[in-house]
View 1 (spheres, helix red, strand yellow):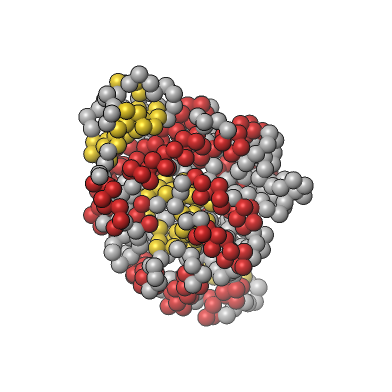
View 2 (spheres, protein in one colour):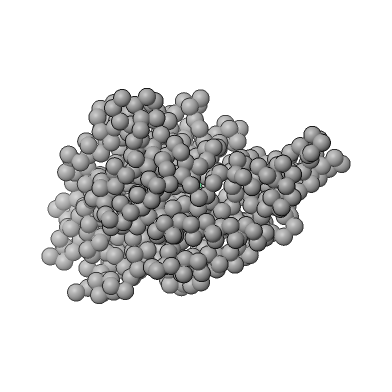
Length: 553
Ligand code: BGC
């Protein structure tokens, strides 16, 4: 028996799980209104279980005016009516559990919706409610300038000015994202108490854990000092008074106590865009959060050298705090990786997953992107720790880059002054079946079209079409997920094998993973091919942009 297998019984589910991200608006529409919902998701739970994943992460499903697709929460203890009811949510959790799937929800603690009861009360002058947000007088002779120079993550100033009780221009409030997402003041104990209570509300309903939205944003530097003008600094690379402040850790120590008071204990995964893995490891100390997304992997170009550095850095720093690594290729905020890999690759870690710099500058070779995506999932699933899959990546979906401007819905589009197309292109409703839109996303007789238009070319990318093709990317995902559970789970780091510079080659347990990111094929060692990313892998050859898992003959 291999070392990996002997370790297995001691591992908690969250140390090894492959988690499937459900972006609920775009997963499946059960009632025909063009928006995904709980009924649609419940109907597809057996499909998800059949993939061989262990858990679901569901993007925010709470009541929301949808200024930022649900990340503007109006009530943290209920479900958005267009998605369904709280009772349906409870059913969904128990149905997922019956299929062996854990359920992770998304909590949004940095800001509420401007339609949240607290903010509405704050606007009506309720001083107790106002103290839960960050209101400040402006600078300048008449307070006409924002209190500091912070910018919203979506572009433009992070402050909006309000009218006071007399209808005159009054104080400003902080919003690190859209104006409809006012930031909470986490120095206020009422805010802390409220969120610990929200955690209990869902843990009492058997939710297994939370993904924490903008986990690095809750605490701001005292006095809210200016950042200083650094127009060329890449996102979150410089210490910024709004991000990754040391005070934030105290909040998570409190949350951990809540999670540990349950049997079995509940878990957290942090979304924290911080400067480096040392800073990220702070969130993973034993009395804080369990895991955090390793975004360097998602920012890495298709280049063996960079990927290897990222993998080593992530596994080393996770090992130091005893946490599993957490690999992600795509999510609802970044350009889908088929498209990222379909253009020329930057020499080093890229910022462009966020700013989408290339979308109108260089045509995408989607066939190449898809080949690389097939190899990339074999790399991802051979790595230690946990992995997150984003819905539709198992269909090989590419970013939809030609959504007409007037149909775009992401606030990033207008807040960036129409320079950044935003994230709609990775959020287009999934194609399930049939040969034309809505491709089974909505039921027969639906009254509305999907909330974003689906490309006609998706006729070949539906679940139905891919299920029937033994060589499809969907069937590659199924095979890789099955083999991973059998042979590759665990936290042991990769043991690197000597290989050409453009090739990643490592052993974990009984399996060798070989990935060729270069332009020329290479000879593989004389071993049995357990799985290959495409049929070019034959006769001991590994062509460019392909991967193979090998075992002893
Ligand atoms: C979420 C985004 C959201 C933002 C504000 C992010 O990290 O993933 O989709 O727009 O937080 O809540």
